[in-house]
Image (cartoon, rainbow, N blue to C red):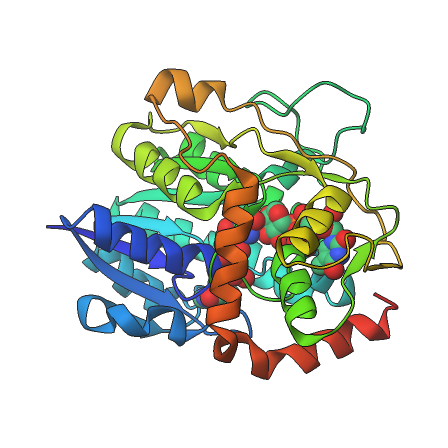
Length: 332
Ligand code: NAD
Ligand code: TDX
């Protein structure tokens, strides 16, 4: 059995990765390390707790990471502070977890000679203009905009430096916006679904013309497995599924799928420094490693996601008032 250490495995993408791996890749023995911040939820793993080892801890703890990395073969590093709006309210935890945490893991990887796959975001490339036909590719220069995206860009550069300077065995992937079950209700799609389910009007930042390149979380995770299996050490791969849509279209589609009037939402204060458009060219991953996305029908994916939040209201209801109160303070 290959031993897989998954950081941030109680969060949105990490917990989906645990479920995906247990279902599709039974040859892996899984350990999850997660600090259980506001974004980490053990309920995401309840159904599989008897099949994994769970460690509550901080990736910035060098002794803990040395111990865990030593005991495992491959580290898949999801743990991060992940929300742009939070990084505008208080950047400190982003610097600590995303930069110092990644540095801590890199030092353990270097010490014990283990394999790392570092999970990152397309936001490291900054944004594209709405009328620009270009997409991000592996040669696009880093140009991050927010405290969140610049902390992720910093973490990528640390991984690249440890590859070049110390020869560690690592790969990096930069993925576009994920959606699916277990996504925290602070994020755009679950916030709007749970607003509608709670009788609160959905909230669109600014004009709503900003474009995001949506990918189902299982497609992200199948791509991560493809890179772990076949990726060339030292390389970086972009992950995306040609899912570009503007926020207004996504919100109107959610309203329509939930049987509501398509205009039943509010325009609220825009995000300061709001990135206009993200778009991924995943040719390298598709042609060199043979990966393909499976869930490319966004309407069907949104319907399944709406159904999940409807059927799992106890998963999010306790958090709802607190999240909305924090947004209300910023007029959002
Ligand atoms: P999330 O916020 O839902 O989950 C993050 C997890 O990390 C939580 O379980 C949290 O408890 C844990 N964590 C935070 N700080 C920690 C620390 N110091 N030590 C240990 N655990 C800690 O985030 P997500 O959306 O699942 O994102 C996971 C990764 O994927 C992040 O690295 C993010 O940058 C990247 N990513 C996300 C998206 C997206 O659309 N959500 C897209 C591309 C890349
Ligand atoms: O209520 C809202 N209304 C709104 O219009 C919220 C929460 C967001 N938005 C807009 C802002 C963005 O243009 O929707 C878009 C998506 O917002 P988020 O869900 O906050 O995602 P984004 O900022 O694009 O970042 C996401 O994708 C890349 C993840 O949160 C990151 O972790 C990932 O790296």
